[in-house]
Length: 135
Image 1 (cartoon, rainbow, N blue to C red):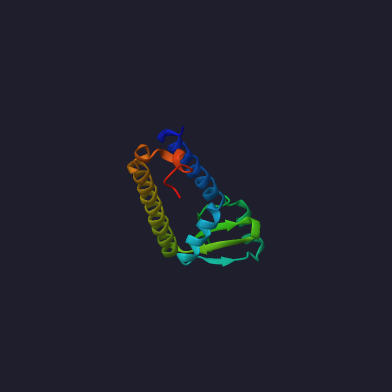
Image 2 (cartoon, rainbow, N blue to C red):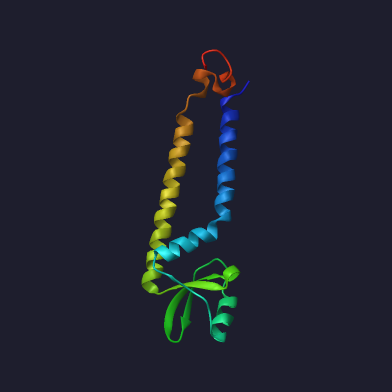
């Protein structure tokens, strides 16, 4: 006999699996947001650029002063390139990240509300799928 608690545990497991899959594409998401904000992909060609790229934290936007200007760099060490933007692009990047976070939180809240609103016991939960009335 399946109880509402068992069904809820199944939903939690599915949500955790989706979260784990989402973490795997975390850099891809950051890259997409950076490009949408106006960051440009470059391949370092000068020795000082190569050195600088190798010292930056991976998968993270870092503020860097280079030749008297402020840049924001998201290194892609795996592909030997970087996504680079200025202060305006970085501000856009931050706004896009915030909007995405709010969107994700709203989606999670809606899913939790929907799961809580389901009255599993009224129709016997998942245990009645093969029984009379389903075909």
